[in-house]
Image (cartoon, rainbow, N blue to C red; front, side, top):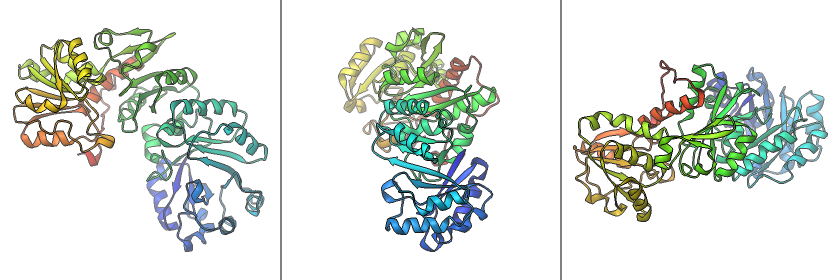
Length: 486
């Protein structure tokens, strides 16, 4: 089930929240710790205000909730609310058998016994869940993985807990996102969503239902994904998941935040994962684990697409073609011959090779000059320090390949001293936000603009072919631009 967490101040506001998300959810959780005091006392009436089953919860502050009064008053509030026809009640694992538990059982409600760890994945996770199940309750664990190894541990734990029919197991935070989307692979009773990230890692109900179709995942579903660090900003699921649906392929594409490529390959064997996209900073780190690589990967030394081929992993690079596609016309018209490339990472390698193979002269500027020099030597290009980028105003095009301008670096211009003009072609590989600080200056100067979204879609469709063996559905529109980015 997909569960919507109700976190508004009044019962009526929560009813409105249900109406907004009704097509996307199967069950709701009423968090009475969020309600104002008057509505909290009337919580028993809430199940009659919706046609969905309701979980009753009053979460303490130390467990991530809003209730800060005494434990005695909290349990008394829960007991009063249990007069209502709730389907489930969530009571923390460490609460001794109380009147609430007895009353819930007498009314035929199912009791969830939960524990939360916002610091780690506890070593005794499996033992605690087994103990809860033995006492007749549904065990729930919400824990904080801090590495891909911790995510692997959660999937391993789900196998150890396979004999427990009803359980809720999920990871919080950016590393935990795959466990929320792949909740059925964890054999979890439900996954939680909210309208404003009530808990770390929540995504919207609509995204869970429409983008990922998480509730349709079964034992035959093929898992694909994208690895990076960070990766929460990725729009690639908006390409691949609709594409899978368009060709009626039972598959799902999921973001994995990865700090260790080696561990992710181990997780991929366990799940299994059938293929994945690779973004920063792992485009070179994956190379030692590949049994076969394409000509582009050999030349560029960077891989952005990995696919399972029989008993080995094969790597290709669709960045090369995805990057160059929007530039073909100006290149053919000889409007772009001299190019400044900002950055010297994995994305830059693909761009530089594509430009060099199309006869362009390239100068690479980077904060780490030695890294720029190394890439320049490999590609027969020139190099300089990032601080001197403004001295190259005579180039025809500027290609920005770094992450400066997105995430925590949003609003920062990587080359603030570069004097853009109407003669420049400016290509920003960042796709979220659509308009970066650098692009804003280029637009004001009248430069010709090329967006990272164009490259993302082009290379994503090529990845889709590698994953599935089929062309991307021609009549399927790809919409990746958020309203706030336009």
